[in-house]
View 1 (cartoon, rainbow, N blue to C red):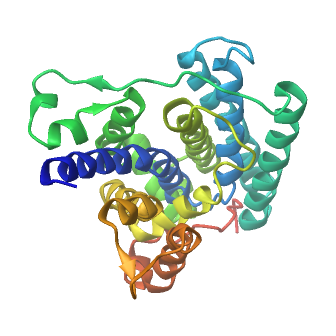
View 2 (spheres, one colour):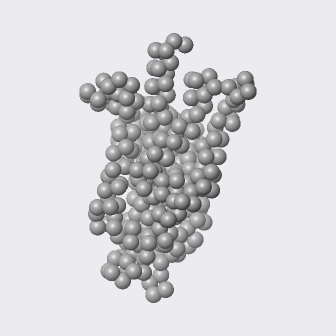
View 3 (cartoon, rainbow, N blue to C red):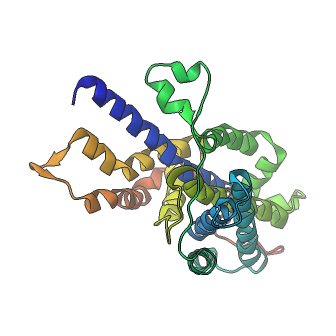
Length: 318
């Protein structure tokens, strides 16, 4: 392989890594809102699966053939509804948030599989979003093809990072979310409606998880598969810890995990061998999950950014 060909392959692999970071980024940013309000939502995985199925079912000509944009909207609405369920169970009913989240995940996994079999007969394909070249910027050497020749959902994920940071730092609602997550009793004494703030944050987090799920079949894979997230939602939750609840650090984590997720591609491109032998693909595929465990073990320094009231139900007067 000559140098020019190798460069083209590396650029293509880098562009794929950026695109693959999109579901991580959408879901992790949504979880930032939820956790900063004090609700630990482990249901991200199930919400993503339902968002993925409903979005492609709406968009596919084997489903409702409503178009890609309506498919994305359907994924967002589905995620918001499941976020509402999570908020009701954990905020209103004061159920254990971890168990509630696992319940949402199991619900989403089972329901998406059942609907896939019943409504789609096990087959759902779609013509996904195509890359949109940004004038002038896409002509930049190397960076142009990596950063500015992506589909609209990738651009949307990247734009959400500064928007999320602004919402959390510069708006009244964002300040209320952080206050409720740190000390809900004090926030309540100041006139903040703790329940309403938590509901809004969890529903928004669910909507973004649904959007993350929709991004997979509509912008990456062109197809829905049973359990296609394969634990990505749990990795997104770990990524929030890795990023210390900061949208910018979460973006860095998304790129890192995406690179690990696509490590098998890089190994093939660079022809990396271990002790002279080809590294088994299954070993490479488990690296993101190993990395998530390592992050949770060594993320102690980030605990100082942890919302103090996270995973603690609020009862007025307690």
